[in-house]
Image 1 (cartoon, rainbow, N blue to C red):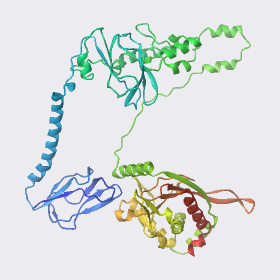
Image 2: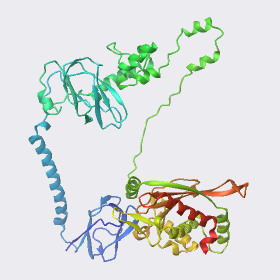
Image 3: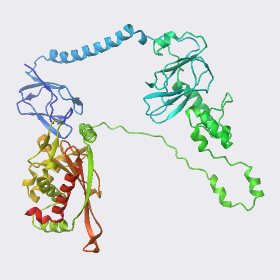
Image 4: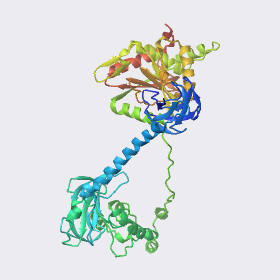
Amino acid sequence: MATIINMPRLSDTMEEGTVASWFKKVGDVVSEGDILAEIETDKATMEFESFYEGTLLHIGVAEGETVPVDQLLCVIGSENEDITAILNGSSGQISSASADTSADATEDPASTPSKQGAEIPSGVEIITMPRLSDTMEEGTVASWIKKVGDDISEGDILAEIETDKATMEFESFYEGTLLHIGVEEGQTTAVESLLAIIGPKGTDISGIVANGGVVANPQPVNDISSAAPKEVSASQEATASPVVAETSGRIFASPLAKKIAADKGINLAEVKGSGENGRIIKADIENYTPQKTTVSEPVTSAAPSSKPEEKLSVTPVYVPVGEPSFEEVKNSSMRKTIAKRLGQSKFTAPHYYLTLEVAMDEAMASRKQINSVPDVKVSFNDLVVKACAMALRKHPQVNTQWTDAVTKIAKHISIGVAVAVEDGLVVPVLPFTDQMSLTQIGSNVRVLATKAKQKKLTPAEMDGSTFTVSNLGMFGITSFTSIINQPNSAILSVGAIVQKPVVKDGQIVVGNTMTLTLACDHRTIDGATGAAFLQTLKTYLENPVTMLA
């Protein structure tokens, strides 16, 4: 009997997997323990073996494709076994779901009159909530300048609309009578929802209002977005001249812009508008600089004592020209998990940060002596990891995990070491770090880092940390803050060792210092507890011999 194999959950955080490569093809004989495929999880690329015997009858996920956990991966069964029912059963369910969805979509308009749309009377224009900024998804009507029954002319301000960035005046592009207001003052509605209706006085618009502004045969021009091109082209033709030319002879400007221009004696015809469809707004008036004209010549001749430097004020400003462009890169499973886990940590754990400077002269001397022994190589990061393990033993409250019911104080110490890989970041773990020597820590970290870069880490090698160390010192970063690697309660950020003047025995000398920053979860670690941990850590690093006691 055929066996359906689904995309396995190969790590505790895995939600989807990508088939990196198939080792078997359809028709191959599969034995228990055979490697079927390499699957890329959110943390590593792992070999997936078969727990069944038979013939590979079907592959459901091609190489390079990504599917959620528990979705059909492949089918194994007897040679030439008919699995049409299995495959049709899966597709049939999908088809049924699609059919149900289609049916719902079909039934809704029939059962809900508002979805059918109403006929739009002649001369009536439907105004929808405009998108006044690139990030705007909804708008709030701060105030209506016009009320139902008022006559509207093209360019009249209808309302003030509050967006996600500012409160802006919204003007009409149509003429007629304001027949209906769809959003009252103070109310918020989505972009493109019915805002108002303008048309001939006395027109019956009850059908449009009842349908929320949905019409059976919408006209091609019914809101600001479709009306804009005609105005924009007119504005573009006028770019060669500072005068904003309007075919109707009317200059579009906000009431506030008109008032400021009048106060400053500025001719609006000389101002180029940057608002919707070339409308002049407050910023245009405030940034307006009168153009240099021939009048300046007689002024100069009449006042020969004027300073020649004044001519520099009219130097043309270089305006670079280009076209914004983006490249879209598909997010890997690892990148999605990093975004989810770190976002969850940052916004659920109340982070606070403690920073301390450590003198590293003794540590540098000790490391030099240790590495002088043949076949021994210890890094500064190994010294930090060892010091953290010993400090955690003295400050168990830092070695904790928060849950809603209890705080877990770990009796063991397992330190995770952040390792940068091509697709992001992984944290291999050193189990029972406090029981390791410096050389054991160094060799284990190198092995795990190599496996991480090759995407060969197993879930067990990345699970179970109680504290994390992140080191960017090798990149020249002197100090930084990290996001806690939950369920840990703290993470240590290690900066570069730098030479700087320091005071030693009352004298200014050249010293080597390193900055450590401890990010703590305030739910489990109080400020004094975190500070005490850093002081102990500093003692170990400034006196490495104490770590050997």
